Image 1 (cartoon, rainbow, N blue to C red):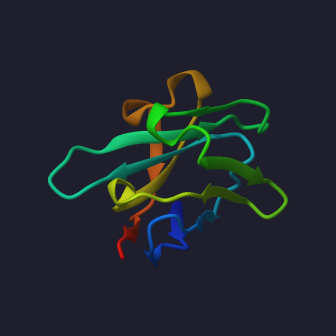
Image 2: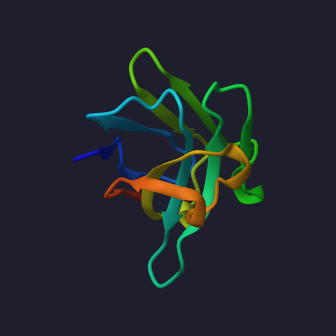
Length: 123
């Protein structure tokens, strides 16, 4: 079964940093655009960031621009989300997902999903 696995979540103080990883099992990520999404308690899931299959194009939701950086290492079959200057409002379960097109890097365009990793930003 094709699977994405997120890791790197945890508890961090406001202003701190975390790096999330998204690794693939049983398939290569090389041909897929990868998106990071998050769902905060009581809220709908939202898109956070996306990276094209080559890594040449990236996109971010406004609330994380300048603080989060998405990257990929196709040799390691892994996509990363570096999160700096974390705020309590970044608290959420973070999911990665794979889709065919960077232009459709929204939830409806994703084919494979991970189960998520919890990020809690609190003092």
